[in-house]
Every structure is written in structure tokens, then in C-alpha cells.
Image (cartoon, rainbow, N blue to C red; front, side, top):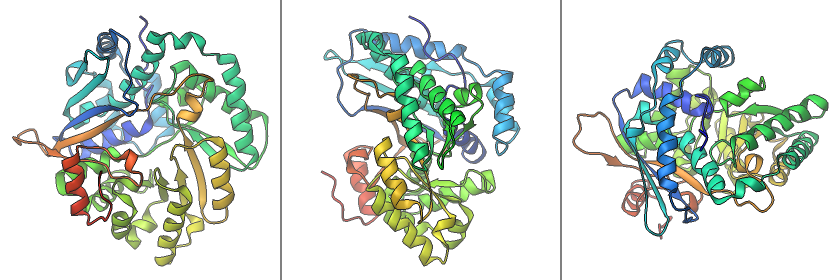
Length: 404
């Protein structure tokens, strides 16, 4: 079978920005990740064997001078030393353990230094998603001509509605070709029409380079989860904001706040950080309610929320984005990051509901034990971590929410 991931920067920007921050601030930290298929999918026989082979082939994928030149041009906030690191970086398949039980269910675990394993997550998820459609035969039903037209129409509607939006769909795309088709269609739509909205770019660095777009993204919940595992969840948002601000000095100023819910973040979101960060990303909960909470918080700090960017990324489609745009337009600077709806929206094809989450961390390799961690977003369905850890974190945060 052909190699699915063929380009080093066929990955989301936030993995590179977090990797840089990890090396600078947590160079000896060790982590564990675990795969979760929320639909409990039964995978085809032999899936684990082929997945292991695809992961081994990642060891031959290295960054090119063209990719480095593009990152230098578009991502001036990344320090130059990081490109020397990427030049020498090689994926290590020994960090990944893949198994498949007799019923066909898949298990994937990662373990190793944070700075090395962090670049595996998105690529492995993209492989799992595309490989599933190949091995089930569903890939043969993907109509890319029709998908171009469908994607072009999505972009047209959002531009006409005044939405500023970007693609964030690498992890659960139907295929590399599906993501590329969507991005090409949306860029060509943007180039061919004028309107109050705008297609801003994509989280996928390689496709941003290929189509001369802006690569977009900042951080993931992983960053706050790891800090919470090392130092506790109560101040993890504060420590994450402090570390991020120190690393990027005002750039990449959209903070993902919902790792442990709005309440504890709001307590950590003091006036200095509210002024420093350009805005917030809403990734769980009711979009309208979460926006109102953010607006009220900014107002309580005597900050005009209309000067702040709010990025919505909570499982959106075109219709929900347009409805949010109408509500938020005069309250903040809204923008939208849309994933699966852009890159895996074929008729008759069900997107994979898969994630890889960081579950344990230790500050240095010399520690004899890991500290477990979890994520407690505004949606209980997006909780990650074992039940004991979830209960411990809920108790530490004095949350009234009970874990079933």
C-alpha cells in the first residue's frame, strides 16, 4: 500500500508551535498518550499491521529546505534554532504501540519525551482515518469533483455571510486529497469573489505552503493538560499563559481556555493576560453561552470585547458558523476554525470520531512515576482520562459537575 503521509509539514501548525514551546520550557518532560475511538469502531482484519507499517514509514519523512523557507517566511514568531532541531528530527516508531484485539477494536499508545512524541499525534490520526476508508473500500466511493463543488459552495456561503474562517481538518480528514480539494476550492472561491467574509487559510502547514496561504493555529488542550499533570489543574491555565507569553512574546495570542472549563479559567484570566492575549478560542459548550461569558469577563476588566478575537472551533458546520456570526458580529471579532465538516463531508461516508489524548506526564525522565492527567471541557462527552483522575481533578477544582 502507498505511503499515506509523505510530507513532514503535512501536519497542523499547533503541533510545531507547541513542540517549540515544550523544548524551550519542558525539555526533559516525558509523556504518555492514548488513542480513543468514541464510536468503538470495529476495524478491518490486519488494520493494526498496516498502521504499524505506515508509522514506520514516517521515519523516512524529513523536512525539506522549501518547507523551512516557508515557515521562516510565514511564521516569524518561531525562533531560528527550532529549524535546526527540525532538520535533525526523525520520527521513532518505537514510541508507538499498536494492537488490535480479536473483535477488531484498535488500541494505540505513545510514550517518550514530550518534544519527540508531540509530532506524532496528528499524523497518526490522519493515517488511521484515511487507512480505514482504504481498507474498507469506502475510499473508492469518494467523488472529488463533486467535493470540489460542495466545498466551493461552503466557502461562498460563508464569505457572503461575513465569516472569517479557516480549515482545521487534518486529523479526521477522509484523505489527503479530500483536504487538498477543499482547500483548493475555498481558495479559488476567495480569489473569484468579493464579500464581507474571508477564507484565511489552513492549519495544515504543507497545504498552506502549496497554495500560498497563511498557516494558522496556536495550541491544543494537550499543553494545559500536561502542565496540570505536573503542577495541578488549579493554576494550569495561568502557568500555560505565562509560559506561552514568555516563549512567543505576544505572537500566537489566541488562548484555548476550556481544558478545565470556564470557571477556573476565569479565575486565572487576570487583567494583564486579558490585555496581552489577542483573544480566546471556544471549543466546547454552548457557543452562544460561552461567548457571553467571555464578553462579560472582558467587560469586568474594563476591556472592550469588540477589540478581542473569539475563534469558534466547536464541531462547526456552515450553518452553525453563520448563525454564530450573526450573533457575535457586533460583540467581538469572530472567526471560525472548521475541521471535519470541511475535510470529511462526503455523502454516505461517516467521519471517524477519533482522538489521541495525553493521559500522563512526568517532569523529567529521572522520576520513577508518571502523574495522570485529564481534560474536563464544557462538554462531558469530550472528557478524557480515566475515571479516577477525572474525579480527582473535579474535586480539586471544586466543580459541582459529577462524572458518571
